[in-house]
Amino acid sequence: MKTLRWVIPAFVVACGGASSAQVFFGQDLNTNGNVRGPRAAADAAHAAFVAAFPITGFESFELRTPGTIPTSTLFKFTGTNRTALAFGFTGTAPWIQNLPTGTNTGSYPAHLNKYLGMGLTMTSGAPVSTTMTLAFSSPVQGFGLYITDVDNSVPKVEVTFLGGGTTIYVPPLVMNNGSIAFWGVRHINSSIVSVRLRDFGSHSSDRVGLDRLTVGIVPEPGTLLVVAAGAATLLARRRRPFLKETS
Image 1 (cartoon, one colour):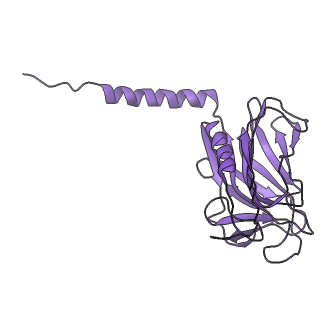
Image 2 (spheres, one colour; image 1 turned 60 degrees about the horizontal axis):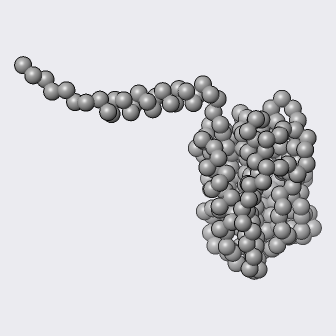
Image 3 (cartoon, helix red, strand yellow; image 1 turned 180 degrees about the vertical axis):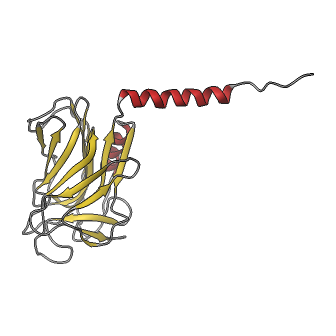
């Protein structure tokens, strides 16, 4: 059993847009695709990603009905006011599976009971989309996701920035049935308007699971000042001494 520790390298695999990128990655390999394996490295990378932002939000699919998702649907990132329109599927749309225990030949939820499957259908070898685009309701400064069961595909994340420009990232996933990884990117000087997930699974032999899609948000400086001022006022009120009336 091999575990890859999470790392935060400051490089872009394929440039086309913004600089100042911080990449988060951790993968835990599994020798038995029918059993959920270790996840310490993936969880450490996710924790580091979350710690890098004042605000983070998650789409974990728990409120969604199992089965094929609509060809155009909103993902909602709990903890933020951000949504993302999911569209751009190649052929049949991906699906949601409820899987409290075990794996679906290697793919499974990263958190709780549900996850999004791409590449092959939930129960057979028929193909479904390996591609999906997420267009955010308002720009974000970071995006990440958990990935399970990459063993016959090379996933890519195509990030498009506010004002134009695109960067294509290739997460350094080891092809291993039943493995789990977290990959994320933070852009310090650029805002992300959309991401396109490409080659997540293969139409012939690979079913890939996605879960805990995560966005990171850095509020505008004016917003931070308002929040700070409110916190300072509240703290001052709490510290104000109690004055006893005297006659």
